[in-house]
Image (cartoon, rainbow, N blue to C red):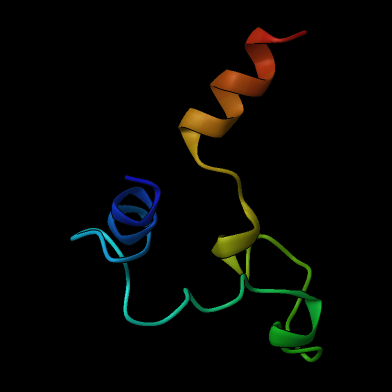
Length: 57
């Protein structure tokens, strides 16, 4: 029975063939990017993030 449980846990249909890639870190962000949100709109938080942050005040 123990061998069957081990086999089920190691070869499930939801197992990925390879691990997920690492998360984006500071070394992945170009250093020459601007910190001005008018020129780089990716720096502006989304409305959902802003409303969530405002509701926790």
